[in-house]
Image 1 (cartoon, rainbow over the protein chains, first blue to last red):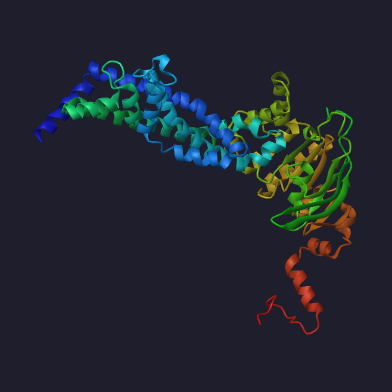
Image 2 (cartoon, each protein chain N blue to C red):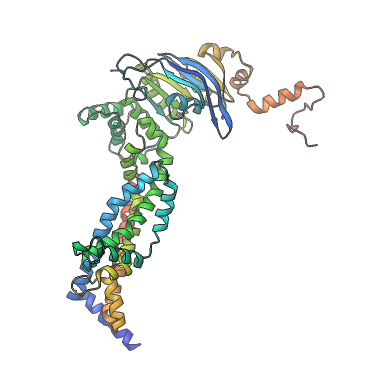
Length: 234
Length: 269
């Protein structure tokens, strides 16, 4: 129990004192996850909207697949990216394994289906409401796509947030493709896993506190933006 | 100012039927709309009024028959010369002015020309002071005026209106009717549905009376409101409850049928 209390005290001291090791790990985590979510958003929004608006053979199967991929296990994604990027794999020559780039690739694969699937639902619901009006004004699905994404922007914030939550919290994929190398690919989740197994609870707890705070802050900010904007724009 | 000639009218519906879920909702509809007038489509709920407008406007395809714009052809797209206002307008989540601007951009007008048209349309609809407001926070009445401003900016040759005042209070209805009259005065052909008889009297040049998917009567407003030829139309303008009355008449006409008030319309054996 005293160990536990001491660990908490040490953890708070690290967070409050901007411990350089901790700051480096937090910085890399944010860099990887934000870039991954940014890329996944750029891919996921138009893909989700297109699946919502266009009718093509295999569409139902794609919708089911997208929804299923939302629950993709991170370790499986890690394994697939590992195989692709390993020396013997098709992209081995690029030498990306155990770099932050590999971690970003894995997280993009993990997060894109989440954003695309949620976007599809949002845009499909909007289209039900808008279709007659948009067609009457002369906009078929292709021309309406951007307008629908824009009109769904407040709800889509939640989709992107879900993606960010997934990216920042997962440990399996970044562990496998990043390797948890100190000062290179060590992020919050992999560091926590390592420190706990080493018995260094202070750093693990410190990182845990930062991770929770970040997640809370991002969600609170997004909620506030959504609420104010929605009240303003209706 | 108006859509450049030649006109896309007349619009002809030739034996148009529309089916959904195995039910024929519009039956063998044939009529022609030429330029100039305001046609009001009257009829009870489920008569097929909205479907008729959607068929004309091209939002749905007829199951049988043809919708023909006789003036179209030679590179004229009839869709670009018509517009529609719905019972519940859909406003985009952007400003009042941007809603009008978006409609114009879909018609391929460049930005420099759009600005003036947007200002003009909003001024005519009395919405200039709200130009920068988000469209979705306007009242329902203001949103409907905005919907009219949006189509007015397009300067359509034909404007379809599907019960545009059905959810509005009298003062908002008055505002909307004034705008419709002004759009018509500027040269747009009006084809509108309503089940508000007072409104039909105020706006109609001619009336089309629909019942259960069929066109039962088409007459000038004067003739129709003086004395419709069709017995159902007579009952309708007398404000009788059509279905109830009809069933009652049939029952009463049969010898031995129960005739006092308050009888159930059917008996259980």
